[in-house]
Length: 375
Image 1 (cartoon, helix red, strand yellow):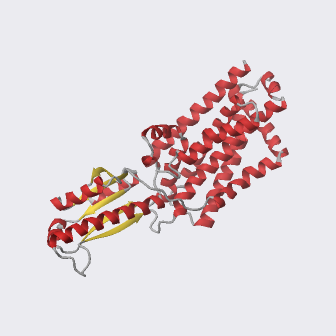
Image 2 (cartoon, helix red, strand yellow):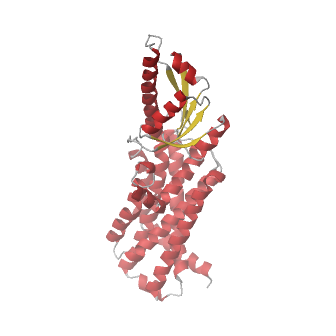
Image 3 (tube, rainbow, N blue to C red):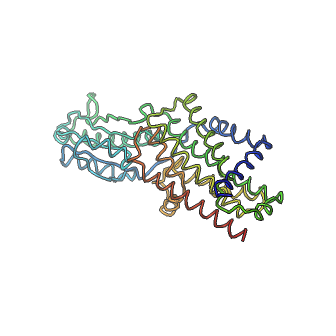
């Protein structure tokens, strides 16, 4: 029998097993929708190290003082200077900056004479909570600097402040928290259904004693892993896409990018998650241990270390290094780029490549461990 035939035989066997276990099937299909409804609310957190780009069209002492006020506040980190307005879009698209401060020409002259002038802050709104916080920080800094200029010019009058901030929120103008929360929930739910389902299915065979029969069969480790994960891949993909559609129906989640790239990104993420579930099953001997390992090694990192809730830039350096091995970190970048920004793969191809590497490494490790156990 060919390797494809062996894989098909394992997949057919697993489908029959899933058909007999109706409760597991219901959990895999309906629990994601339940999680989406339960966790569809906003969480607010203090944010630091916000990447800031500056377009200084005045280049005066006053404009440099304003930029210095942003940087010295501890909330913003100056990443680059922009020379032309056409550079703003690419900088925000590539996530090189979360906000762009635009200072008009004549700013220093107007500030010195107490004449009202406006500065603009353009904010990436794909994360509504972050954008709201950034706008609040910027508003406070501009107000403090305005009071200083008013005092210097001795023109504290009813005419209003010297500086006026005009915020512009891109990708999420209404700052709806669900547009930031739902993509993270998709990653969390996909990881939940994929890792737990495969980990428990393999360990269940160990507990039932049927794993010995599999070991004695001519099925190799890799065809077994692929055949074992194929049915759960289909179920998890259907579950993930149903969450996307449900989010569009209930929370008005936009779809500004390519459906093909969305399905491809979800598929890459699921392959790695399913392989990780098989890898856990090669270590655990009982379903209880497998579930606990899945919770600690996949679900919690997806929730805490992917940028879903807590901004990675605000984490300690040691934790930021750990996030590079969390696949949800890369999946969320691709997902938000597709759904909220409508960007092509040229922007997030590195994140897709990271998901491919993760899936290949995990599937290889799972096959290697099974091969050693069967030897």
